[in-house]
Image (cartoon, rainbow, N blue to C red; front, side, top):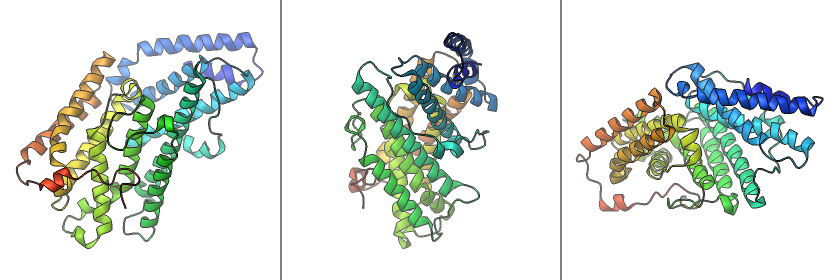
Length: 367
């Protein structure tokens, strides 16, 4: 109801101003009523709960945009619609990437026909408004790249296998596009390569997305190695290097995960799914006889308590009953931690291996 009222207030060009304002007020009232019931979606595991969270994210973005001051109503109304579309596109893609069986509204089929966001007054300070726009554009570009990676390498019908003649060139092209994205970030959104905290939440969130995308691009090598444990990876250094990049990136991301406002308030449930998947990915690498010695063992042991503390803190911030999905992710993470601890003494890595930097993570630090 909230989305319908707000959408009608900006899409219908012939609607009188007073009627438009009334629709916005009704939309705000419906949104406030829905927010009071939102905790129910977090404690239920169902398709309807997922759809509720998805629509709430879209409605939150709508409400924020409609509270902005208009400099040029006709131009700004169109800009609102464009930004709402891309916000919904990013939000839906985030959920579909983790839960591909969810019903979709196929925003991706329209993305090539929709203009990218332009100038819009979202902040009083012009420089903050510019940073906000650049951040939105960077987020859209990276989400589209992630969608391409999922479609070209993981789709059940057309996804490429690593020994397909096309796979190396597709994999290299996706990695090159990710490097180009990283290299063209404006200074206000750049993040350090060594894991130090970024200067602002925008950059910190983009770093997490960057690391997720890099892991997705190289994970097919790891999946193939785990499916073929008897294969000697030294006979194919391309596969071995791909596995090391996927594992290093995954471990680096989890090791340097930090509290970001958007993740805490919007993405806690989705992030918990991603964290559990990443930890299980590391467990798979740990169980491979040729890959386990490539992992930073001390970092693995520290992961469980670190992630557990973060998720528990985020749950307390929400102040409502924890989601069963988040609780399940917490259990998986701590089971993985117990597994790593139980296997810690089996192989003692060399001092050189423990000191080895995460050499494949950022552009310019790998071959």
